[in-house]
Amino acid sequence: MSDPETQTEPLVGTPAQAPRSSRAYKVAGLTLLGCVLIVGQAAIAYFLLSQKSDIKSLQEQNDKINTELTRGRSASVPVQMHMPMSVMTELLDDTMEEEASAGVPGKTPAPLTTCQQEFAGLKPVQVPGFRPRCDKKGLYERQQCFMRQCWCVNPADGQQIPGSLRQGPVNCSSIRAIPAGATLTLSDE
Image (cartoon, rainbow, N blue to C red; front, top):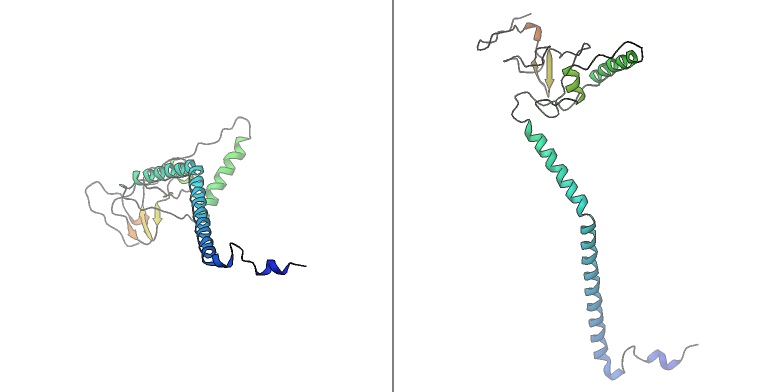
């Protein structure tokens, strides 16, 4: 099957050159390792260059978001991050009625109120992420809340009534309209 002479012959050189063959293996191994490292660096450079436009667009989006977030930080109204689902259904019910009335000839749909536009995100609010609660007529609900803090607002324009900010629910019917500079009094009802 195989020649007995080829089984005892060294792979590189003669038996007298055995130390040189191990050195050749070391050099070949280091050369191969160097080539693998160079190819790996070239692959990384290729992927970075091919993704350069994606990285640039992500940086632009990040800058845009940062400017939007810093734009409204001077407002004194708390940010509301989560909305109760009941408010969404009320808003959707109003929109469905408006869409249904839009199909009737001669009847135009009512435009969205400022509160509804702010709730839907169509109009910017003072604090990014805050969405006011609106009643069925599209006016601001008297009590607005965020993260266990509540305050009263004027239903027509949504302006906060000074001194109404409290930890927990506020009885807005007990807060009387006060002139500017006067002190706030709450009645026990």
